Length: 172
Image (cartoon, rainbow, N blue to C red; front, side, top):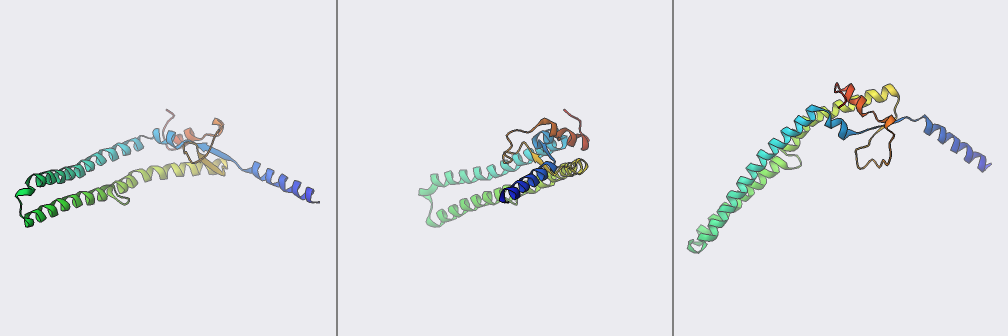
């Protein structure tokens, strides 16, 4: 009796597994074929370089202040030393705060990236959802993701080009 129940359960699971439809997509391929994504990355790189230059300028200024302080330290009174040290520390703090403002977890670069990339990701998600609903896919897996753990995926079920067509971009 146990063997019969086990056999029935295996048969039910096999039928259920066959009823599922899966598809693969390559997010890196899709994104590389969307011009708006490339423009967004270019904008992010430009603004990042600009902000990094601002932070580096403050760090350079603090470094110069420190070198000047080291050269003058023997000629300064205790009060002057303390004042110069405070000025140097204030400049370093200013540089650190600016770096956090621009590049921190909730910084300007994060906000800019979110504002530029989120609409593209939403558009891709909606295209994937529409295609999945039309074709009855239960699961769409990103084959470009290192965490997906896919060793092999049949090109027959890769819908990357279809996603690009749905978004209005041709195959390239």
